[in-house]
Length: 462
Ligand SMILES: *Cc1c(COP(=O)(O)O)cnc(C)c1O
Image (tube, rainbow, N blue to C red; front, side, top):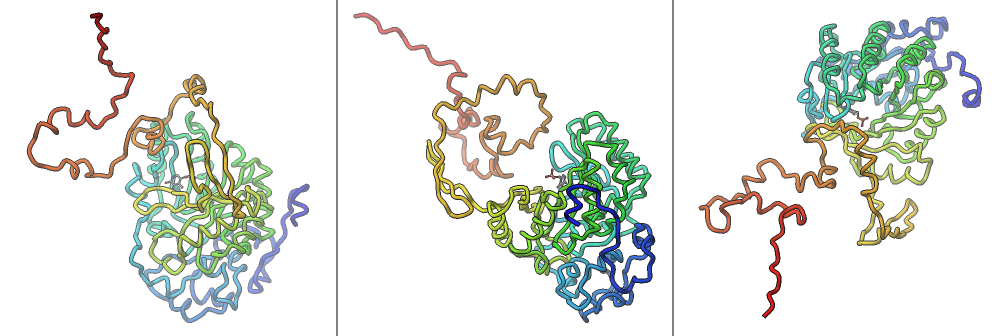
């Protein structure tokens, strides 16, 4: 399989099928519509494929649980006898899903707050997340959007798509649109193409991307026709979601092959999950298998503080340990960025081991992955201003208030203060000689050179 990858396109064959479906003709099995309409969602259906534990059965028959639906293809990857199977843990609920934990939240990323129109999340200055459906091919138990995903009554209308697109048209700083959901790849093919073509028609939208687990849950959806279709809207990027090497099948490899041949750069976003992939060895195997099918590991997410996912969370230190075990030990291409999507809507925050040990005016002290400690000597004659003329040729596309620490570094701002900071430190009491007057100006830099200097008197001759 991997040999063919380097030369000829991978041809379609059935490799992954549980015995329960042995009598299904190959053409049917490889038809994504058949897979979608034959998904498993009840305890009785699942019991035909795996030996359910009491805990799984109890969860599956309880009320109010986040939706269960599993494609026959992906169900075939589960170990029927091992309840700790890493594929099974991702998609089969257990009783533990019903155990609340203290820090859990309904909308932990505060996406709804950042939503100017239904389904559009505008969190970052230059890009938006466009939720185009609430439906998926199968449902991950740790879904960050389980508050809306899976609910067929919560889906988006034509008017809402229009409002989303209109917002993007009217917001010129948006240069990157990320379609997600739910899973955009379960949309009716015509509808998805309509959205892509309308986005491509917006002059300031530079790149379009999709985040999808369909290539993993339902690789047969990535037909040649699909690859040709998205290839019409370049630059188009796609991120998939693989958590464990068991999910990298010949079918997924063939789907990835069709996409990369159509010029679509592929990335992977995985979630760090207890009992699934919380090990350096498994993560290394995962990223190696990914780069073999030309998928670049993009993000490794810390599990969100979402209801039902408590038992799948790991400590952050486990994630740092995994990153320590990847960087330097393997190809840079195979190393994802480990991020925590900040509760409260802070966005993705990278978390990594420390490599900078110390710093002085002319030297920085670093350590490498092996523990080798070295110094890098700073240049003595570095002049960052030489680039200014070139910078002025590039029109800024930033949004005020989001410069963050780059604003501090560039000197636009001197500090960032927490809310209420100014009030706490204006210590009441009466106005007096030392504090009255230009209270504010006192704490601003004098900007030597920019203000008028007092003229020195010429020394008088005696
Ligand atoms: C993750 C995310 C993006 C895209 O972030 P990148 O770091 O550019 O991949 C955009 N908007 C929202 C709300 C997101 O959560």
